[in-house]
Amino acid sequence: MASSNFVEHRGFLMPSKYYDINTFEYICNEFQVRDQDVFNITYPKSGTTWMQEILTLIQSDGDTTISHTVPNWERVPWLELPLFVKKLESQHSPRFLASHLPVHLFPKSFFTSKAKAIYTVRNPRDVLVSLHYFSKAAGFLDELDNIEELLPKFLKGEVFGGSWFEHVRGWLGVRDQVNLLILTYEELLQDLRGSVMRICNFLGRELNEAAIDSVVENTTLKSMKDNKMSNHSTVNKEIIDVQKSPFIRKGISGDWRNHFTPAMIESFDATYKEAIKDINFKFIWDQC
Image 1 (spheres, helix red, strand yellow):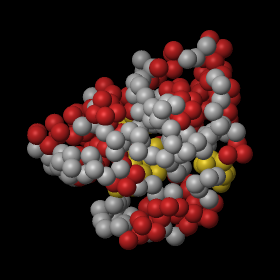
Image 2 (cartoon, helix red, strand yellow; image 1 turned 120 degrees about the vertical axis):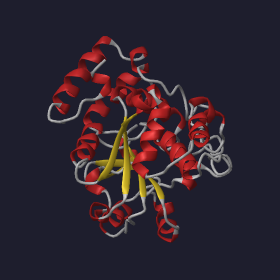
Image 3 (cartoon, one colour; image 1 turned 90 degrees about the vertical axis):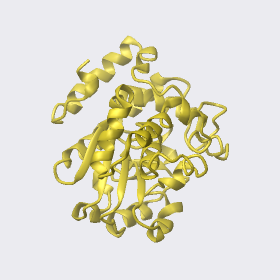
Image 4 (tube, one colour; image 1 turned 45 degrees about the vertical axis):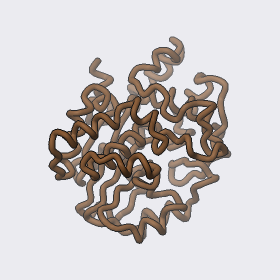
């Protein structure tokens, strides 16, 4: 996962094969957010696909037709991907958009709009493990032989998405200024139904029990693994080869314990404690 693969813009790193600085600047300074827009914001490997599925099914009142026939990146397209930018501008409202952008690169028009955003946060230790396996499948990332090599790069923000710490600090820092719902990956795992109901309430969507049942049933790990429209098995193998590593792998919390050595734990914890000391937020994984 060498830095030569990335385009770097104000601390944000994304694959240079598919992203460019001009698009980042356009999105930040010129893209017009609409009041009806809903954003699915995450640091990479933190539940983006999961939220794409949830939002799709909530919008369709639990009807699976679209989620089983249209790829998730078309249902909830990427805001900052040059391939989608012009399509987004002609898309009918309400638009559901996914983004890995940090707060300082997000569209300025968002902060004066009534648009809503859901920010999903995941234990960074599990993010690191997921990123390691993703590098095996992603043709636009260098695969590292072991997680030990990835750890120092992750702690320095020299990976896909840049610094986890800065990304999280930035979005949590504006949570009282915009229409932002904060969810954790771990909360989705512990209480998927309750999380779906929170999202419905945030979006102002009233679903009956049968519709909620369908949303929950079709956004379980097994359902998404079996759905070709969400498991990335239809993507060109040069982009993502799921035969090398499944795009939706374990989808659990705490898998980092199976990968971190004592030395890795010590190194990570030292950086983590220092980096989050000024973040006024209690993460669920720190309360276990």
